[in-house]
Structure formats: C-alpha cells, structure tokens
Length: 167
Image (tube, rainbow, N blue to C red; front, side, top):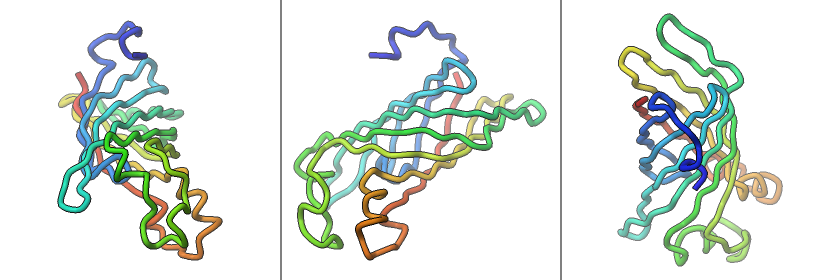
C-alpha cells in the first residue's frame, strides 16, 4: 500500500468522517498529506439500498494550490482532485442503471467508478479540527450531461461535508 512506504510525521495524518454523497451516505477513514499541496484519503463508505446497508471503499487524491494562513488557522480555499469508489457488493452498486435512464445498460457495468472533486478545507489549528466541503461528479455524470435529456443536477453532482482531526 502506498501509505505504508511513506515516512510520515504525526502532523501529516488526519482522521475523517464525512457525509459524503457519492462516497457513501457516511464515510470514515484517514488522510495523509506528504506536502501542504498534496494529500490522499482512504475511506470506507456505507449507503442504504432496499432496506440493507452496503459498503464501498474510496480513494481520493487532492491538490491544494493555495494554503492561506488565517491567524493561527489554515484555509485551503480551492482544492481539486480525482477519486475512485469501489463497491464491495458488486450485485447492487454501479452494476444496474436506475430507472431514470433510457435502457438498463445505459452505463457500463462495473464495481469501480471514478470522478472529479472540488472543495475547500478550513483547519482550526489550536484544536486541530478541520471542516471541509466537497463537490463531486462521477464519470457517468459527465457522460450523462451530454447524453441524457434530464438535466437535473442531483443525478450528476454530489456534495459532502467532512469533519477531520489532525494528528
């Protein structure tokens, strides 16, 4: 695993809990930052479907060009990155197209999805607590923007809030 090969100091790690949209209704995991501009997250997300809970793993690479000190705190006003989400139950998630699409095989059947992310993070340094907001779009969301007459953003874009603790 990539994270195990990196020499890390305690201040480079964050524990995170998210209301995560495409990353699961709720996700929990860790984040590692090897430079102020570069970070990766790994989390496990949970989502309900047909009165049952299913799980997925998520991986995010995030680039933060601007790191702006605000007093003792740190604000990263614009972050971008890419993410992958892998379903641990391949019979339900990412495998079947919802009814709103023109035909059952509208998207390719896969347990792995990827996408783009934009967001911001504010870290309260004395307490080591961070708050983040993310907007994400899946690969199939980009495809649907061009191939689907339904332009309702909820089918293509998701957002999430993250609570983080800096080690």
